[in-house]
Amino acid sequence: MSLETYNVYFSGQIMKDRDPAEVRKKLGAKFKLEGTKLDAFFSGKPVLIKKAVDMEQAVKFRVTFRDAGALVDIRPVERPAAQPDTALPSGSDTASAETFTLSEPGSFDLSDCTPPVQPQPIPDISALALDRPGVSLAETGLPNPAEIDTSELELDKPGVILDENTPAATSIPDIPDLSLSQAREGSLEEYQQPIQPTPIPNIDHLMLEAKEERPSGRAKFDTSDE
Image (tube, rainbow, N blue to C red; front, side, top):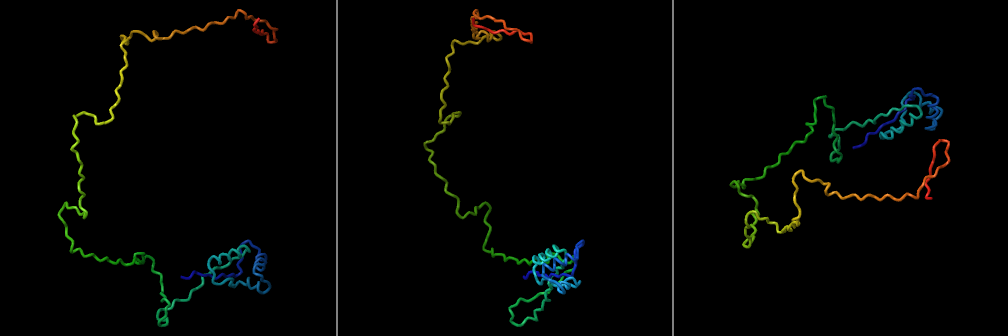
């Protein structure tokens, strides 16, 4: 499928609030035109600037003219009318052209484009038959039961713990000298440890010495070892 192409035309249209003389000067310098050739640019008739370019290139020309203060027209290139199949030479490898038309609004939906569904052939199941209910359809069959020798096993009496790890015996401390007091008798003060008083140091050799009074009217005393 070929890409859409466009022709770029200029008919002398200048953007609003642009100086025509300045626009003419910029376009003449851009395309190296002067005299009658530059006058033809602004004759008011469409002048073909570029032929059969893609949209990206056409937009570049539009930007160039807008920078100069002018406007261009971008028109799609008209394609030749499609020829009917009968017009093709006999034996030609060229694909036949088709003529397309627009449908009326509301007279068409996408369901018309849905390809037809081809029915799948039903396989022959005449050789198959249903078995009786409960029959396993597994072709490998059930596995053989495992044989476990339990001749050396026996049941213990009810209530026996089957844990092989016997818990260690808890030792009971010897407390023959302990006894319980009657309720509300005794107190914890009986078991309180006596507090040993801290001895007071000898301060007989210490004395207070008077100091000179200060403006605040307070006296200050220093201790002396004498």
